[in-house]
Length: 250
Image (cartoon, rainbow, N blue to C red; front, side, top):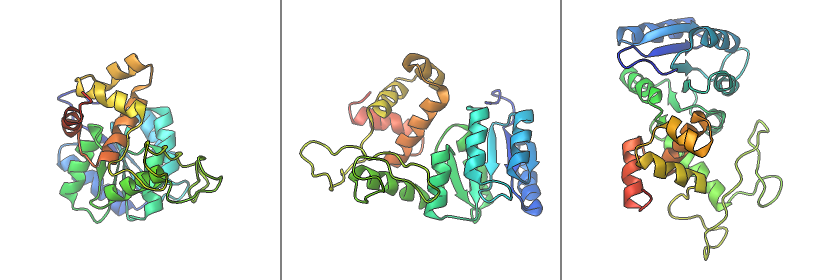
């Protein structure tokens, strides 16, 4: 749920280490955010989120009862407007990809400075994709790998592969005309829907307006924008608009 313009951002802090959890919560409050609550496991996080409806959930990946990726999926299923920022000790490729596949808006490692965390929370609340330096390139690399088809997934060409947990990965995009299937495009390719959403964003339309026009949910529109940001290695909607104008999309 988005806060009113003058209302403090409401954040739910989820971590199974009490000292870390309460320390982060205290720091957020001191910086002007309103801590909607804290939780030490996934089940408690879902209960507190349902009761308090925070704008951002600051979520650890390694919880005692369920994975952070699963908690993310359940949070978004219950409230598509909530933003999830992963704060984890792990920067492993599969952990990052699992979180982003589940719908997290951003991913920050716990070695980040607290000022970075505060900035990431604010950016996440605005719907911007936020990553610890280096992780954006990792996610972008996965998009390029899928687009080029350079790695064969189980199930044969043209079918989606699966990650380590058995979930299906997105199917690779078809190669451009005149380009060999094994040779990835120099610039990541946007899907037709991503291009359509980008064009409307560049016209100044809001997510709800775009959702109504395209008969989608606002969360789906946000996901398209987030995926586009990751693919293009951009950081906010202003950069997206500039890209759209430069490419003649707007």
